[in-house]
Image (cartoon, rainbow, N blue to C red; front, side):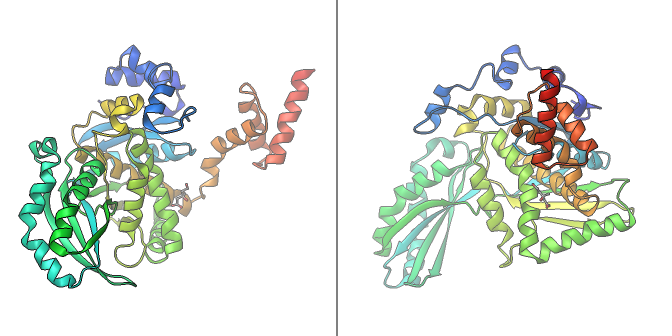
Length: 422
Ligand code: MEV
């Protein structure tokens, strides 16, 4: 498959779907699922959450031009934000010729925390917990024979003493290989099951038994070389200056990482994974050094290339949760043709890196408003009451008048309404 379809962005949604269907051999039924004509129902929604009254459709786009680990990929992105898909596609185009993105993954180890309070001698208890590691592993692994049969399960423990305002608490970390699942259910079940034994050996009182979203043993890295002829001299310097601020200033780093998460969360959502878990992990990881900083690193190459690297925890899976129960997410994952959480994590990280390249390039250049404006204007036109037939004309007139003010757009809509009435 070739992820570079010239003019893909210029096609209508129907034409794009047709092209993609040919590339990915989608059936008529698949197309109906993607376009909302089959697939997700209120019954699906009611099985997923409580007190359901309906569901909220979110646009699903495909970012083009991605080559990840030598494979061309259309990256599915579910987002309500204009410019995100265009930015990812544009950025990845500049990394394509130099080989695209290369990714690695440290494995699917998640941490489950068991908080033990009221322990008389915390260090003595810590030693006792390690002595009983075999039994702890055994109790945990009895909870999930399927995971164990797939080579996963509890693998190790890491016992920490945390000094709080009240006392020194003993915190037992279960290190669980969750393979191709995000793993929250498996880890939480194990943590709850082993609690009585932990209380017995520590003579303490267990309070929390829950997975940690700081998945620092589930790290994905992606790297790519971006060659963009429009970036040289002063432009490159400004790009690097922008990046530097995100390394040293948490106010900027928060926005810089938000832009990265625009890409990451969009793929996480499209594949039915837990956006909040990934976001919490990413931001916590950005602060592990004691200072909140950029999740990406940028270096200058010898020939005006920008060499980028992203590193973050990614707890995502292909099985469990909405990845299977949501018909669109399930189809999207099938379209991605990934066979492991590792592959999916690589795609997500690459998208985050591309998104960051696009944001820094825009910010260091003309700013982001210019690119945003057209889609943004469409939204304002709708808010101002434009009918679907009027939207494009309203946008054209607003661009001519160089305005994106709501009152101006409302006046344009009113003008068209008067004209169409006569
Ligand atoms: C907007 O959603 C994201 C940006 O603010 C990211 C950034 O500033 O790097 C453009």
